[in-house]
Length: 124
Image (tube, rainbow, N blue to C red; front, side, top):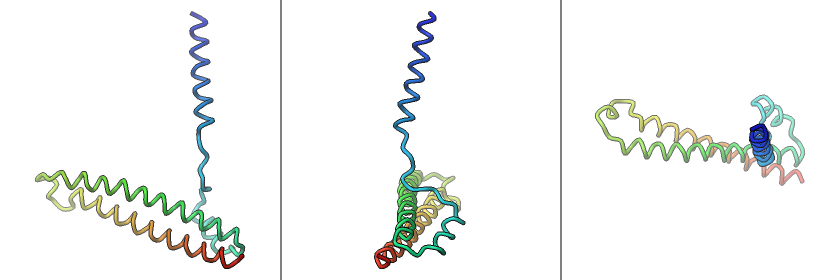
């Protein structure tokens, strides 16, 4: 019985070690809002502009993913037509607003990334 416990513990430790090895580090560093503003003010080299462009591209992708999931939720909610969902604000309306917001933010981040890509290219 003692060997069964030891082998179970070893199996758990091994699975935790394997999952820790497979855990991926975030591709983009997470900056606070004040750090991004400071970087935008002080950037003057191609590398700094490239880092900002990469950050904004990652933000764009995150907002696109959120918009995609909200689009699916909006489609799901629009299929549910009952008397309670007819009252304003309907659940589909809130999903539509969130979808439009995420789409807008993704476009905004894409424009910022393109701007810093251009600055990076011209600084070289």
